Image (cartoon, rainbow, N blue to C red; front, side):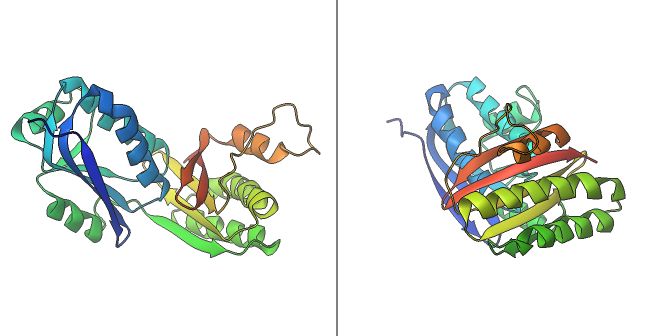
Length: 242
């Protein structure tokens, strides 16, 4: 009897481990993709997907992992490790038929690599109060990160982006916020998480003195930007070329 696809998520120690069970087929991809993106929105150090109890239906369903890996590369820079696939699935993944992904024999090896920092990108984060001084503090965080990573040319753009994102959080969310800056191979990611589920709206008709100007600046400076809902609000992110 075919077992329908199901999964559980364990988020502990800064890692997200998704344990997959049952038959994975094309009709399952939309909801499974949403679940993986929701894990990414929590900005774990690494996302480990345990495939050891997964049965594959159509081979092309594996393209989901490539798509989510590409999304993670744009933001939040979280490494995705596919763990313990069956020999058939491992062969398909390792041949790169559906794009490049990272495969490990099991969750424990992937967890050891993540804990050792060998697959985890460098990042810096801090918690912010919803007050006017939060903007200045956020600028200090990204400045420290850029200088530590010897990227002085990004201090200005990263400070501009984080200033606008935090200012929007102070004005519209009024909740505690988390700012995080992460370095990847070709990009630096800036993200601000707050407790409001409201979608940030880019108002392209706004003038320089009108509401909506902040996201216009973020849009102009960033290579990509976007947002995702989280369990307790949302995260807004932007990627900058290093």
